[in-house]
Each structure stands twice: as C-alpha cells, then as structure tokens.
Length: 424
Image 1 (cartoon, rainbow, N blue to C red):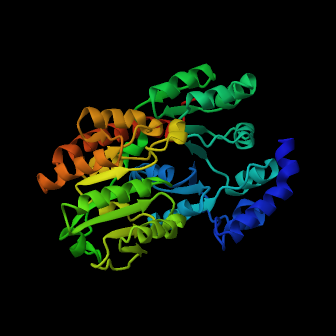
Image 2 (cartoon, helix red, strand yellow):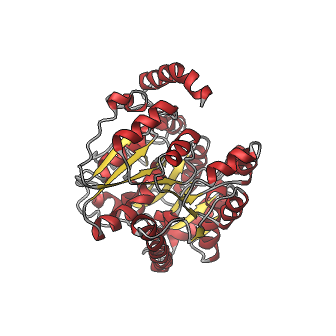
Image 3 (cartoon, rainbow, N blue to C red):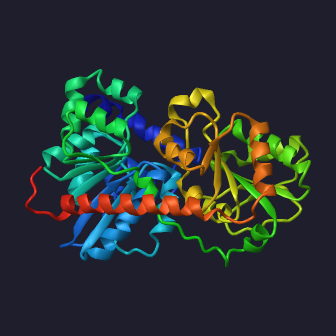
C-alpha cells in the first residue's frame, strides 16, 4: 500500500507515456489515474454488479452471464472494468445497445483511487474474472463488506509459489472471497491451500460464450464462401513465418489457396506484411469493413472482434501462442470459438493456459498437435482434399459443454447475488 502510493506520480507518467505510444485510449486514459475522470452514471435505486476483467478473453467470457442476468432480473446495472485498450474497444462494440452496462478502465491499484472508485460507484456485488487479484482492491472491498466473488480463477503452479512467498498475506487475500469458481481442478487445489472458501469447479466459463454465426450480410461473405481458405488465429511473433511456410507448401498443390492471418496483437500487422513481401507473397492488411481484394493470397486482419466471420468459412485453423518454447508456461490461446464453429484445430505443444480444454478437444478428435510447418501443411492438405463441409460433431460437443457450464455457473451466481439469507 505504501509502495503504490509512493509510485503514484510515476504511474501517472507511465500512463501518459503509454498514451503517447498509442497503448492507451487517447480520450479515456485518465480514467486510470484521476478520480474526477471516473464518469459515474449509475441510477439511484438500482443494484450495481461490478465485473472486473483484464482483457479481451475475460471480457468475452462474461457476456453470456450478463445476458442471463439482464434477461431474468430487472433494475440491474452492470459496471465492467478492463485494463487494455483492445478490451475497451471491444466492450464499446459489444454493449453499444445496452443502456444499463457501463464500461470503464480499471484505475491503477493505489489505495485512495480504489477507495474513491468504490465510494462513487457504490457496487452491490463485485465479481473478479480469472486472476485479476489486486491487493489494495481486495482489502478495500473487504473493509466495505461488499460481497466478492472470483470466477474462472486460474492459478498456475508458478503463480501459486509466488503467492506463498507471503503465505499469511496470500491467505488473508484469498479468504476475502465469498465465492470462488475455478477454471480447472489444479486451481481448486491451490485455492484450498490459500485458505479460500466456497470453492467450486464447473468448467472454464470461456466455454459458454455464444456465437453469432450469421455473416451472410458481411461485405466479404461471397469471397470467403467461394475461395479455398484456412485461418491462423491469435498468432504471435515467429508463428506468422511458420504459417507462411505452410502457405508456400499448400500453394504447390492449390494455386488459389488463401491464408488468413489473425494476429493476437494488431500492432504487428505491418511486420507481418513485410514478411510476406520478403517471400514475394501478395498480401493485404484488412481493416474493419474493408473489402478483400481477390489478387492477394495472404489476408492480415487488422481489427478486433471479427475473427469468427473468418472461422465460419474455414474448415481448418491453426491457433497460435502454442509453438514458442519460451512461452511454455503461459502458452495457448482460446480454441473454443473455433471448435464451436466446426473447425478442425491445430496447435503446437505449448498450450498450458488451455490444457484442460485442449485435452477435451484432442480426445474428441476436434484438435490435433502439430510439431512443425511440414506437419501442419500435410494435415491441411488432407482437410482440403476431404469433405468440404463443416464437421457438425465438433459443434455439438462444444455446445453441450457450453450449456452445462452455463447452467451450473448461473445457478450458484444467482445464489451469491440474490440469496439474502446466505452469509458465507
């Protein structure tokens, strides 16, 4: 607490610097550092539920929960806080038609800022998503006796060991949660050791995301449905080079093959295009609502929230952050949407972040581990030569898991939020 207060002036400078290099929202970055920019809009007499998520994946995972709560309960408002610029942009798009959902950037974890934020918004319950556990935030919530839950909690062995450097502090923090829903069994075990209470595992809530699969009116639907394509999703540095090697292999057999690369971070699109240029591959950086030009063979996506429209028309997808050895303990990106859209999924050996989900997918032959570009190319050739329609079995498996996880999660969340007799 003392350290963050001392560092506050430097953190202000850091946020301004991030704004200059375009890693913060140029109009709203002050929400993170000045309480007069909190822009509180809540209605008097309503019940405010505050969800705090870090980035895009966590934000998308709570959308079905908010939809369910909105559908079955009146007089509710939702405050959603996130950290990253990309998540702020996506929240604006997702909730543009919801008058009772407010997005704000999470203020830096300095005691007086968090106190002011809670005092001004006066949330009735707070739900933290995954591992966004900020000590000042938790301490102040506990002092104000606000019901607190953590959902889709994920602790790796490495993170657990870090917490155990300060065992009593860690136990005090995790004992502050009134409800803990974990993303996997490993985390459930760690939370027991950290003195947490009311711990449950129903499955990863990223399973429950609902997908709009109707893109027939999209500007590029004709192109995507009438060309031979495959997708590389959530790629990181070095993985685009692997995908271009695959494209060159595929091109030997299919002269009209199109490769769609959807990088995890869009600030790298120009670097990816340069890789294409070096290989004499015609490429196009595609921004939102732009038309794909048929003359290009590599399409590099430069927008957020558009991945599913490309996955919809692709039978096969490679998912990134899975081939980089130095990311072994944090590897893996979310394969759920691709599986729900009936894609055959390929991934590298480093999928620690989603190992339980990949285990389910691998077991059901929805996904497959590949070791190099040659192996990926050979599998894609088999897919392209085979049945040209989606495998509906993949979608059925994922939808069944989704419905079960949503039902169990909502049952206990409703009890946490609305059962006035409970005192955990």
